[in-house]
Image (cartoon, rainbow, N blue to C red; front, side):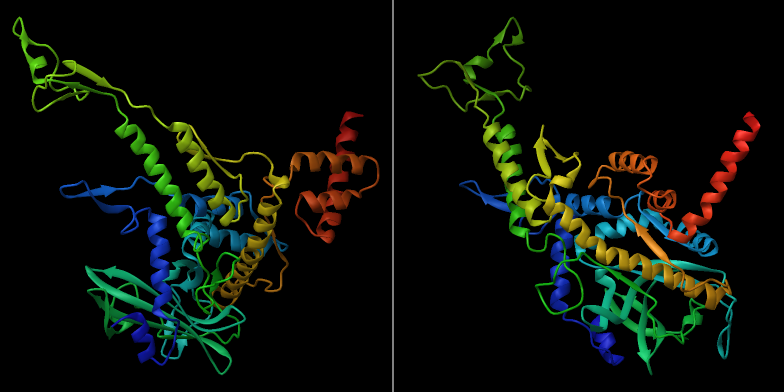
Length: 472
């Protein structure tokens, strides 16, 4: 039984399986081995020859570049409360979030959708249910679209969803199904475990009968109308069906991906087929003083099957390589692909047999500027919601005493869009000229709100006064 069939048996409906077939196509381009394209057969006149097409694997390169533009080490998640900042930072560190966030952003752009699911671990459970405040910590599940099954949505926002994962315990495979759905307007989280055999969901087993699941409650009554999962995807419309799941950044550029690899494959084969050869007649293989005239193991030589009356005994064949034509062809395809995927037309360069990217400040590239800002809208919402879920879990499961309404801001890395060094120097001039207030300068460059910036300034003045006193 498939997951879709199992959910239907439990009374839940999800989206069509056809969409997940498209996901598998996008994944094959992400892996770089597309069935029927990268592996194919060609007739050579007498038989069919198996061939493997050379690839630049732009299906990996494009999502990787978008992840590096949007979710890199310079992105700052700031919570105005120090206690809340420390708590969220600790959860992120314990769950390797600085690394996984970039990885999941890459997979979101490759496959269309990812999810972040914070959950508590080690919570004491009684017959009446979980004991509040008894949890040992919060772990994060990172889920890709193949394991995300929307159950309800509105205006493109998934409100109820199921997530599945395949786990192995003591050599046995299980399908762990987590269902987030509303009951009387409040979220319940059902945890179910099934035996998993031959890629099929089999009979259900009790959670307490499997190690690592003994303390997982059958149902968690959250008592909240806010979801405990976060969905992230590229900010582009799904033109394949009406589902709320996102699509790959290159979902509508498959033909161009093929064009890039066809051009690159021809480029590589130009060198393979254009290798210098020396055609020799069998008579040239005569020995001279007990030694062969040439090394028969040298691949530069090709011995003809028989002597012919005309032509030289040794004939070199030196083909002219069409490198410039191939360079132009590959660059044209890359320009098309770059434009289709939101980078503008000049982001990629085929230089010296490898792919390089633009390194200049891209404020001139209005297409890329608008696209980055467009994708940041969804990413910012996802990061803020994730922080709020972690804070709520900290209060309900760990008695952390956190402010759930704390201000949260996301400072993205705009150094590739605007010259921050020039902006800083300009603001310093405005500050020295009295045009900009000192608290405005601090708020902007320290990523603080107005109240915090004003509060911190006296400390700086005190430090300056103390320093002057010591000098005097």
